[in-house]
Image (cartoon, rainbow, N blue to C red; front, side):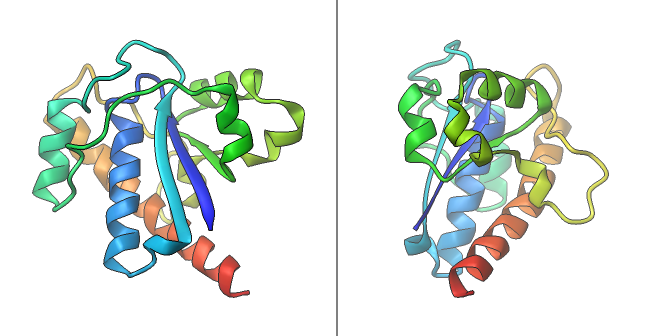
Length: 158
């Protein structure tokens, strides 16, 4: 089993979107038994809150539910527990690098490293924008989720 943690700043927009999209994709393909998935934020702004309503609406239009998710902050035990810790952007990756013990640094990556055919390296924060920003985040997250699931299944087969 591969344990994956998706990380953004507040854990109410990008990382719960990634968690929900990836979980949905794995379940649709009958591969949910291969992964354990969670999300967290580098900051504690929204701990205990549900994902942003705009993110939930955009995801729901694509058949993805986020209603059961609640924001939490990254904790020290996460670096031990998870096999992959995927940051949505460079700023959050740097924060994770500062928090992460050296022996677990190899687990840290940008989520979009797994996305084929995208011209950006970061999932932008849609929080201060309009609904189009949430749709764009979903587009990027779906591509990266496909690539990540493909890599996991390939690795587990090989």
